[in-house]
Structure formats: C-alpha cells, structure tokens
Length: 192
Image 1 (tube, helix red, strand yellow):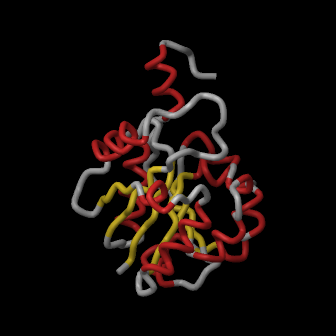
Image 2 (cartoon, rainbow, N blue to C red):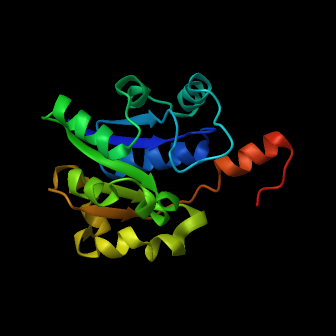
C-alpha cells in the first residue's frame, strides 16, 4: 500500500489543501492520503487555533472521496512533532510505503521544523507547487540541503517506493486559497 501523509493545522481547511492532496494522490499514484490534523502546530504561536474538532470537521468537508482519510492520530498518540509521528506510523505499519506531502509554502519554512533533516531520511517527500512560495521554496534550506535527492517530475509514480532521501516537486495548476486569508476574512481583517 502507498499512503500519502498530509499534515497541518488546517485552520481552516480549504480548496488549496484539497488541491495539494488530490495532486499528490493522482500524480504519485497513491492508494490513499491521510490528512494528519495537528493538535497544535509548534511554529504557530500566539492566536490559538480553532478546536481540533472544528478543524477535523473542516478537513472532512474538503477532503472528499474514498481515498481521503482525516485523522487525529497525532492527538491520540501525543505527538507534537512530525518526525515522531512518522516513526510511530512506520513502526505500526512496516509494510506501507509512506510519502510526506506538503505544499511549497511549507517547504520554504521546513528547516524550522523539529527534525526536518530526519523527516527527509524517514520517508520520500512530495512538494506540490503553491503560488505564495514558488520562488522561496526553490531556495529553501531544505531544497538546497537535499538537492541531490531531488527526483525528476516524471518519476512521481515511483516516489513512494524509493528509498529516502528522495523528493519531488510537482508543478501544475495552482490554487490561491489560503488559511491566513480565510481567517482574516472571517475576522474582518486585511491579511498582512
């Protein structure tokens, strides 16, 4: 089985998230994508997120189709960091080929994640183009550090079975939806 893991706060979940998940599902030929709704993103301090239940419901509303699964496993296993979640899932399901999925906006800041180098060594990584960070992601520390592990886009269907580190950047149609903009609109603010 080939499973994509798509983590985030999803505060709120939106069409851009669905676009990333669907792009990865289709282009990587995955059996399913699991949306890992984070109990609390350690990099997002200040404004408390919506409740986990609200964010789970929002993710379920946009993660449509039988191949999309929304999960609160990080809350259930007490995991704060992605690297720990990956280790736990790999130990529980040793026969599954996992792929970490993220938008290019996440790649731009990936070097700030706890254990980011280890994540690249744990599972293959798929980065889906997002308009807010196309340039920044190209020059991101993670992209530079693992430049030799980057695979050509035509190899996307094989990524799940490649030994890590291996990663790919998937280009295509862009979605301009943004959680920051949606929160600002909901609060009547102008995003900064």
